[in-house]
Amino acid sequence: MRVIFIGPPGAGKGTQAQFICDKLHIPKISTGDMLRAEIEAGSKIGQAVHDLIAKGQLVDDKTVIELIKQRINSKDCDKGFLFDGFPRTVKQAEALEEARVKIDCVISLEVPDQTIIDRLSGRRIHLASGRVYHLQYNPPKIPKQDDFTGEPLVQREDDKEDVIRNRLKTFHQETEPLKEWYQARLGKSKGYFAVEGSGDIKEVQKKIETIIKIASPWGIGGGH
Ligand code: ADP
Ligand code: AMP
Image (cartoon, rainbow, N blue to C red; front, top):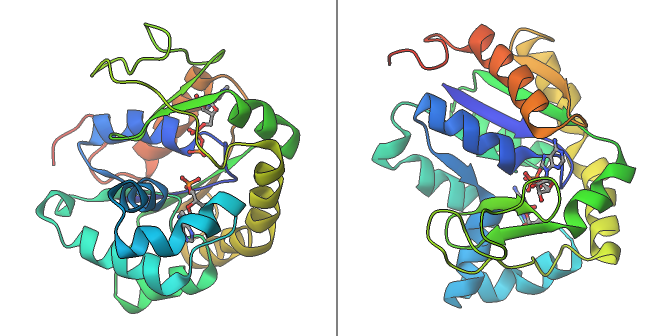
């Protein structure tokens, strides 16, 4: 099963990806997490992308496409994967198509811009795993600590109001056209699904699980 989550920053892609990946036993591939790991490691890529990410602009297509191509060659992607935050431009989607990476299901999480600021200003993350929390809507068991490792949670540098506004603008300009692009290729409610993402976390999870059941050749929790 190869799944793509599309949605504005803060739509709940990472949150919902955790549930789906656990159920389907597939890895979550987040280009955002990968790029933050490069920054944390102080690599050449990390140094090149730091300022762009801090400003809320997209990293160049070539860099992300290269990262993705390497990642999906790993053994753990044999049974599928979930892309969270990739592709983010039509160019990136075309690169997948050219590489003959077949996608089974694209889920667009639809959340209005007003909700995004509230969600992102309360977001805290565990950097090493990409696990996501929210001070109010999804708090960790012990304040400021990751539930699994006890390590400190951090606030992302780009989760500040002015940067969030830039990221939303970028989403509408660069990423939103992908909805039409995938709908035309996969068919509405066949391989392409739009999900209202402004309900609470459990509510959205249920909707996504229903879609995965329709789109999955194995069924959720089923065999491989
Ligand atoms: P994305 O990966 O799309 O940027 P996240 O999954 O990181 O979004 O969610 C953004 C923030 O909103 C996080 O702090 C998360 O805990 C919270 N969140 C996610 N889904 C919901 C929801 N349905 N209702 C309220 N808060 C949510
Ligand atoms: P995310 O964690 O998905 O919110 O991504 C954080 C930031 O990383 C984005 O605002 C972009 O600057 C960069 N980024 C992540 N994924 C991509 C992508 N597919 N293409 C370009 N830039 C990306």
